[in-house]
Length: 406
Image (cartoon, rainbow, N blue to C red):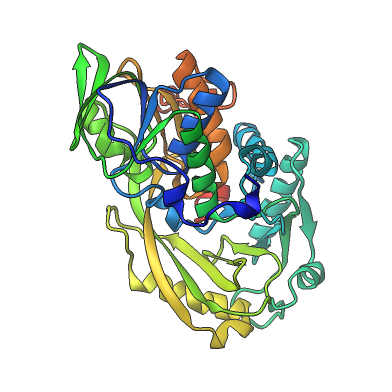
């Protein structure tokens, strides 16, 4: 079936089977990472007797709530390697999955507002180039040429002193990504089970042998946890703790507009990032709420601060109307880098801690996590992100690139 013939409605793309009594592997979490993991388990490792469990509707968690920005301009070698691999997969997966992601490589610009920002940004550009990641430094006039609606005058609260720019970065349509993975998983025999909440685990000593759900117990040899903000809840059920905190993260969208915003603009300093979606709405995100919680909503003052900064940077937005706001639950670690690998429980694996950067990592996270589950050993790309690093001190500090939500 060609991509233009594919139905928009997801009900036609995969089955909704009843859970079987046993599987070779069970993935908990039916979002982008869970679906990508199942796809690569089937494609790369021949494991098709597997189930993806989702407590709600497929990809209804953070996959449906993120602002869809894709980039790989991270500072440290370990982060740059996995995110750059993800970006290369983003470039080929639509053809491989036979489904258009609407992946638009319109570039991502990260603004600098202070001399400290400028120094740090230039350092990052240098580090990116050393890692083979496309990166440029733009002066204010070049910023204006790329994004004419941006205010670069000196007499505003956050003057633009320049920006880093990654031309290959961009945005994709998150629903299409999830549906593409789900469709291919279903074709290969993977069971995608919606409305199936995990309530506990069955263990034989320190080895997991089953998953308890609200639809019965499922026996399995391997369990992969890919539940983002609720990973710590699942870990607690399994008898271990994760060094992550869950915070609400908000985003908003405007009414439809004619194309006015040609790229993606982000600002760590004021915690705002803006792109224009394919239909024409402005998609805008802010920083995380400071409190911990699992409510998929956030504080009003975060939106207020974000909008004030956005209108100063983009005066044209002053008359735009906000259509709706929403929140997701992000799982942040002490070093703002993910946890992907083995756990203290035998045959249980975890993929969490991506914080605000989970969507952009989806293909590489799925590929490496699938390798880890199938072989029992980490892939070279996810090996640095093991849980043990919080004991050894081998942290990968990406607060500068990941602490703002983008």
